[in-house]
Length: 138
Image (tube, rainbow, N blue to C red):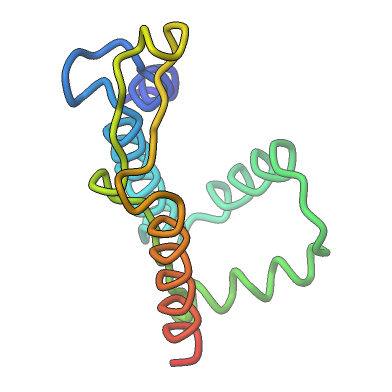
């Protein structure tokens, strides 16, 4: 998939049914990010200095950061050589929300918390964050 096609795929809001929801769009975005990660961490990419240089130049131009190049190199070293990289994704489950008809919100797609309200959403996020802290300590 080309970059342009991938961008259209992850941004699409014009699908019908369940594929048109923000939840499906989020799943598409996560799938593309996993694919990019696999490609970047492949031996073909990591063992070719030109590929690494091109990747660095692209990211350096596109990403603003508040760490130095040395700090970034240390992080990359830990990820690649020491395999010290844990990624945990948190996605709010569809069951926490209802999607009212668009006419109720001037044609906008909105999510409204189910009967538990935002208290239930906040509890889910809190539990997720504690789970991530637990994983970080391992």
